[in-house]
Image 1 (tube, rainbow, N blue to C red):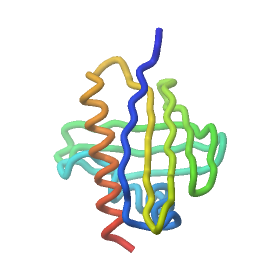
Image 2 (cartoon, rainbow, N blue to C red; image 1 turned 180 degrees about the horizontal axis):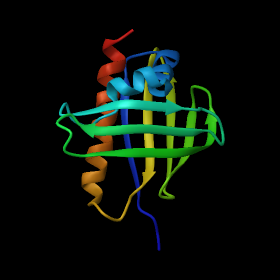
Image 3 (cartoon, rainbow, N blue to C red; image 1 turned 180 degrees about the vertical axis):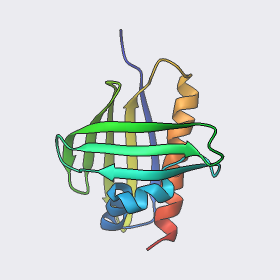
Image 4 (cartoon, one colour; image 1 turned 30 degrees about the vertical axis):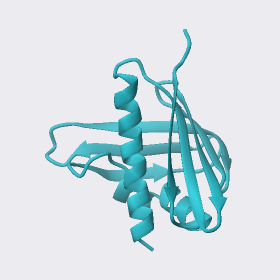
Length: 139
């Protein structure tokens, strides 16, 4: 069975170091890792190295639903690339392209088989837009 790949991206008005730090450090991840203001990310852990684990708890603020997102890193190139395998076996890669003080963040991930592709794309893009807003407005 062929896997559907989905790609989303944003341009972040921040240099590579700030963008990387906001994307990878747990104290920042908990501030942006949700698709809507009715959700939150109360906990994140990140062992950012090949073979290291990533964990984020995502929950509705009203407590009605939540889930754990877990992955194992396959490759990490500081301020350039993060490749990982999600706990369900799907693959994802995040690229950081730096130019003139801005950073393009591009995520390509394998679609899952439960939700429509458009819904998955919109959800991941909403989280990436939350990351962009947070990074651009916080030092």
